[in-house]
Image 1 (cartoon, rainbow, N blue to C red):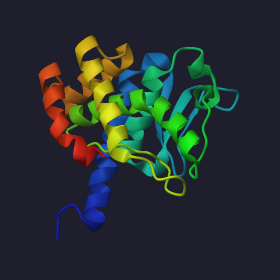
Image 2: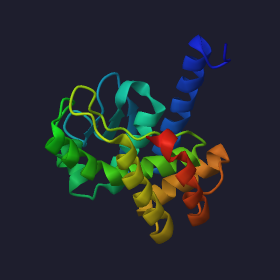
Image 3: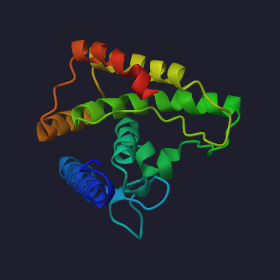
Length: 194
């Protein structure tokens, strides 16, 4: 039995999520945005009459969900950050082939950032096609497209907020920096990512 199974795993993961929340909130306090552990589906909520700060609510308290939702926030521009869920179209689980294809196109960049965040936090990354009750997507092909985008970011630079958070994660978790050479070596992880 692993030392991270059962209650030990839950409390270990919970502590890591608490650390991630603190890192994000401290790094981006100038953006009046907080990372919030959710109990249901993820959502981005801009500040409004009921809450004076923006909230990135991630699903079920999962570390990987937090990284994914942070990735969406790092891509969203000022206008998008004023809208619920950045004003994006979202078709829930149960998508047909055309809807799944549209979903994957808009998920490539956030999932590439999530992969970079995962590396910086010393975590394993896996793509999410998020369609358990719909058409079965080609996970390996999608992982390959996400990997190509990650290579592009490594070669040309990450969006500013993403680069800042990668640096914070690297420093906190003492993980190796994601260099273009290391990014190329991640191709061996494609099968795991899919």
